[in-house]
Image 1 (cartoon, rainbow, N blue to C red):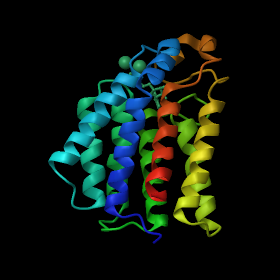
Image 2: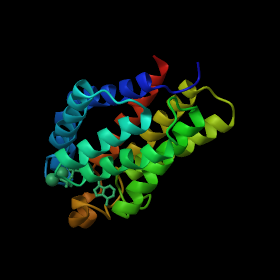
Image 3: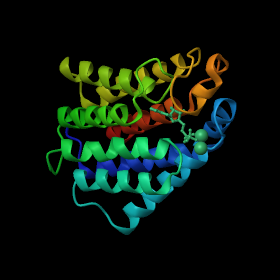
Image 4: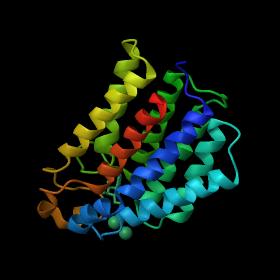
Length: 211
Ligand code: ADP
Ligand code: MG
Ligand code: MG
């Protein structure tokens, strides 16, 4: 108990895919307000392909799982979110060091490497009204909870709560990256779609680890 094994990581991706399917229309509605109304469809297409890939070719270790998921997202999603979520998973792969099972700190380090990849690729900073605004506080909360001796399940619950707060905090922000930035000040007053899906990603990790 305590480590994050391959089954748990697969469950994470499948749980995220299920949440995206359930929230597809809601994600698209958010994107209709400040983007081009395809975030739900983009994420649903991508995560459906990821799950199909897992069913067809089960990954042999966490690094292979993340690489497979990342490549699938980059290939199957046309929008900004595909390459960004793809990069997140692709950067997580080497950060596992090839381990068969991840201790919580390694899982947190891998997520951090993924976020750094998203930032390197998209150049968004906290406050720019993007997925980075949900992921950054989530990973800070995860690190803090693990450092204070919380279990992985507790730490991911704290991360999920922080991601939700970060998502909510995007509403008043003026977008400075992505399509929403074309609206300038008019982007304020709307929750960011990518921060919303990113909060689902963190919530799915909390669910998968708690099971
Ligand atoms: P597109 O904007 O190409 O239609 P999506 O609608 O699927 O792609 O995704 C939009 C989301 O992607 C935004 O809500 C935002 O969170 C995220 N996003 C866009 N550009 C960036 C960026 N440069 N860095 C981080 N996240 C970004
Ligand atoms: Mg869009
Ligand atoms: Mg689009």
